[in-house]
Length: 328
Length: 268
Ligand SMILES: Cc1cc2nc3c(=O)[nH]c(=O)nc-3n(C[C@H](O)[C@H](O)[C@H](O)COP(=O)(O)OP(=O)(O)OC[C@H]3O[C@@H](n4cnc5c(N)ncnc54)[C@H](O)[C@@H]3O)c2cc1C
Ligand SMILES: Nc1ncnc2c1ncn2[C@@H]1O[C@H](COP(=O)(O)O)[C@@H](O)[C@H]1O
Image 1 (cartoon, rainbow over the protein chains, first blue to last red):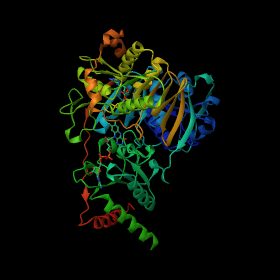
Image 2 (cartoon, rainbow over the protein chains, first blue to last red):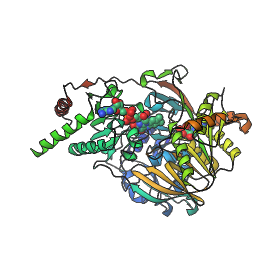
Image 3 (spheres, helix red, strand yellow):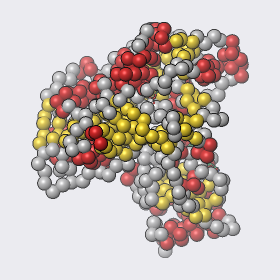
Image 4 (cartoon, chains in turn yellow, orange):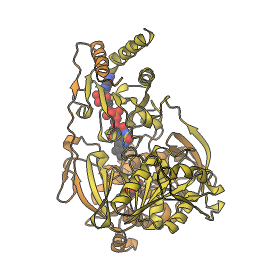
């Protein structure tokens, strides 16, 4: 398996961390396999964005610019990807594990008759030119090693598990513009409303400090405290699934297996028991502080610093102290 | 209108790590005392269907379907007690574990037999293997439109209006009928608890069991064509962290010590 295709579907006007992680994984895998890597860039204004991709050292960037691609929708995007795959002949396709990657990857895989794996945490080219994939299962309680023997194989990376590829000094790559027929009638789903949820000032995935709350907060008021603390620390607020399901925190704050994967310097887990499905979201946190009334809570097995206490008698004190200092 | 919800029976993924065992030889999870449960996102999917039915005018029929062994009957029984109208088990006893591709092929064959169908709901991913594929595969196999990460569905004439999650919020999509949706959790589709009376009614209902062979697909061909991933190893990753606990008489004391410690470590 030699041809590795990094599939980038950026939503913003920049090639961000998620895209750079995909390119990083593709570049390293290709070099282990003594192969080539290329980029498929499907986005509105893809041509303008392609410069940012070339700067990362890609040798070939396939772009599709089409009016039907201005607004993201799976059907036209899949059509564009099929077009790229036809010329790029990839043995391995790599997507980001964000909501768009998770939506497009399995459908493209089906069309390509490709094996497929989501939530890959490590990727390696092994002898025989095979691709070895590490994938946690059971919410991270176990890990599996899978080997793809027959191409193609399609992979979604777990966010924050791969080193992003950074700019190189010399760019030698070239852009291939593909003209692909995309009928407007392909689009069978149409966005009629879009809401960006209120987030704390810092973006969760980028935040250096995260204060995160769980069912143990007992209600939405708890999150007001966490928000105040996070603001004083210059951080963001996260949540467990239980807290999101309860409606105390917006869904986009959920951290874990099916939420955000974060990598802060400091993660403060408040009233979170530490279910494996939550912990897989914070494996890249440098220091974990847990505040929990139950000394046996599993969160203390992964925490660096533990405080066995009701959060109501800890968080307000932290807030008070930090406020006093900043006014002093 | 006919809605089908696909329920995957799985070994409870929320059992404590201390009770979690695998057999490294056969590379399988040992069930031990763990229950077989409905995949949590499939419970969210059923809840989404039930709520859609409650809000809609007119007749909506809900069918629950599982591929599993005979011990999966309880999962379907529970769906009936939540007022699904019918439940069907596709028995895969004695078969090797199905991959996502074979699962989709078998479900598609069963769904064709259940036609006409207006809406198929799957979970976004199964809590055991986190495949995240079967719903999308079904959409491809049937050539139906598909919306992912959905948590609420309403009917609008020949369309569905679906609320779906994005990375930074949510959007509302209008989707042609018939359609497939993969369902995720949010505060609106937390699964309800069955009523005692409905549970008793559910016990009286017949749950048809279909045989894979009867569905007229050659499962071995399906498998051969697609088994390209070899499971080389499965293990429980080690964690060896030691937590240092902050001591103190009262919360205030601990809080102040925590701040000191974080300062000492130059984290804040
Ligand atoms: C397929 C699948 C995917 C999942 N994905 C995710 C995911 O992405 N993210 C996620 O978080 N979960 C996920 N889950 C759910 C996960 O398994 C747990 O159910 C969930 O994380 C529990 O949330 P919690 O810790 O807030 O609640 P609980 O487990 O109920 O823990 C609450 C904790 O609060 C403590 N507490 C109570 N009162 C106080 C107090 N006054 N002060 C301090 N502490 C207190 C308790 O001791 C307890 O430890 C998933 C599950 C499945 C099956
Ligand atoms: N054995 C099964 N029986 C019924 N539905 C299933 C089965 N396996 C998967 N599904 C459906 O497909 C979804 C995604 O599964 P997966 O792709 O395996 O993560 C699940 O949430 C179910 O809705």
